[in-house]
Image 1 (tube, one colour):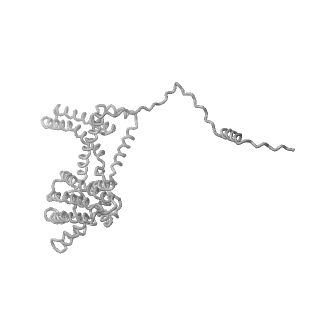
Image 2 (spheres, rainbow, N blue to C red):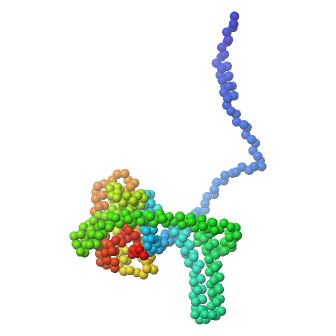
Image 3 (cartoon, rainbow, N blue to C red):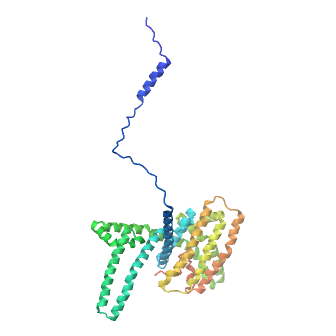
Length: 413
């Protein structure tokens, strides 16, 4: 008779299971012994920066930023004196207001300040370096007047030629080194330039740097933005200004034009801000959207419009008489200094309204509406009387520097 198998105990089954599970688990190989000849990298904490060095960096950065602002406005004023450069200046102002409208930070409106500081430093350094050459040319001219064929005049000409050659090589070396102001005071620019020429590849490097610098300026972008901003604002201003211009012949049409112009003035600055913020040309027709944003920040809109129109009115005094063409950039500088804060504040007011969800109290909205009536009426009167004070007559009505090209005189040739 077959003996039945004796059942195993629970303890024996647990032991067998543990042995099988242990055999199924992969075993990691033993760690290798550390090689004493191979040094392990040790991460050392960075020492705290010296407060004095941080102060120097802050002063240097602040000085560069302030110098960049000055160079930026001087460069824009020069562009404003050039026919096509006027659209570049307008495009920059629109971009500044658009960035502030997107972020709500005033400092974002100063676009390209560091780049302007770099270009301004190059211009300043070149001017200082070429000043001795200019003084020497005056002495050489005086020597030629006294004795045209004398040895002194020839010596001055040879010295000027040698100095000019050295300055050109020194300037090229400074530009290739980095183009900052400190690179122009480097005494080894010419030897370093000769070394780079011997090493080869200098032409390709210089070509790539120039191309990257030009592309980084975004000139086509600013020009196209200025053209579209000009066209969109002109569509709103053309008909009211036309009626305002014929008001001296038909007074009723003049009143209608003044009334329409006053209404348009309320919306055009913020329609331009919306266009610059969204980069869509149809934003010039989204009046209801601008009204909704106004309902959420009425006092900010009123303050921005006050600054925009009040800063634009005194500039009409600079458009009464034509000045020499060589000095137009000086008046353009004043125009930019007055118009730029208005553009930035317009973007700031729009950003405040765009970030809020609920409209403000109805009393605040009506306070904002009534607050802008005096400044709008004053601006309409200033525009109307400008056709009788300026040398251009009725055509000066269409040179709306507050909304169109930020220049005293619009020239197309």
